[in-house]
Length: 72
Image (cartoon, one colour):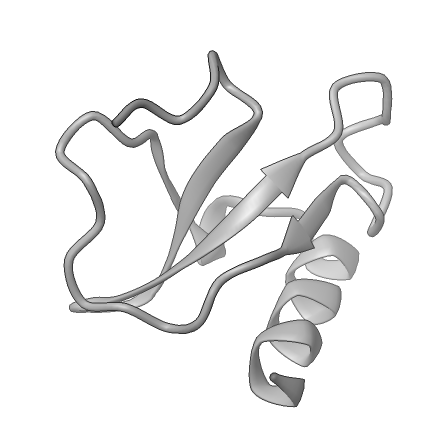
């Protein structure tokens, strides 16, 4: 099953750990509300999924994503 034409991505937390997140398209890349964490931590994302490394995200966005992940 696909990931709805770019609405969702998998964020790579570290080697072998991924989390599914919703991407809001009308929001700036530096806004912490751009990614909404949806799923639990998984070790195998779908092969069609777009993977974004957590290190590539701006620092404010990274902090928000990590806070949401470990709050789940």
